[in-house]
Image (cartoon, rainbow, N blue to C red; front, side, top):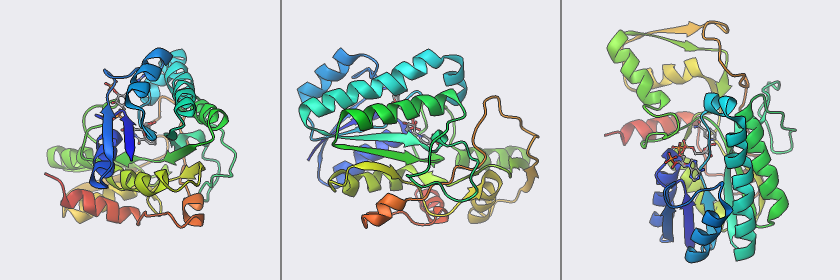
Length: 286
Ligand SMILES: NC(=O)c1ccc[n+]([C@@H]2O[C@H](COP(=O)([O-])OP(=O)(O)OC[C@H]3O[C@@H](n4cnc5c(N)ncnc54)[C@H](OP(=O)(O)O)[C@@H]3O)[C@@H](O)[C@H]2O)c1
């Protein structure tokens, strides 16, 4: 199939290009210099030239603090940009796979969020991503909206810069010998390589709709760090930070664990326990 990947030089985008290429698909990777989501003419012109059968949108404005500072820009990219894409995808009769986030939830639950749970974002980022979901779902029938959580991969996240959580923990342990990590926020660390591999069967399944797509299980950031140090035999004094020790500048859900209910119902779920993803990442680390 002919696949266009938007955000192709990003953390998830690079692995997405690789997963579809390995599958034998013809992949066209589009970076920000190739396409501007918020500009409908740019979206339309680029995609009409390519005429893909599937469009995977990994691009977003997703730096949480920057979204809070520039809410209008965040809405234009994450909300209206997704509408631009959905309109063009519909006109080209292409399937649109839109990546979304666990931050559409408020974290008030204490059991995993399913696709049928009502979203209630706490911040601008979550609100604008939710707007993007609604635009996609109401504009084009042939869509997959895929929510994920706490992603990490070998390619750096362009919006956040620097290191992913695993590399940051290993660096801090090396430099300081002591690391303090929040123990009161629960997520499911998800490898971008595994998520990208999930896109391949989902994209040709025909079961359009809303999906949660994360590794299995859950942990606090402290437990995530503990697993990293234990798998790498890193000697470090790991301390749990109290709930108010590192106050967040922007409200975030305390619990955003997702259940891959719809993937499982369609027999499509490929995800393993999150610890396996961390192990795979560490074993393929340069
Ligand atoms: N990070 C997480 O833990 C997490 C959790 C849940 C969901 N997500 C979602 O996962 C997706 C991928 O994240 P990631 O870490 O791979 O991001 P990333 O590394 O920052 O890559 C994002 C890509 O999007 C491009 N982009 C940004 N604004 C654009 C625009 N207006 N038009 C066209 N391209 C644009 C960026 O290009 P430039 O850098 O050149 O601007 C970059 O190539 C995002 O949709 C995010 O919301 C992330």
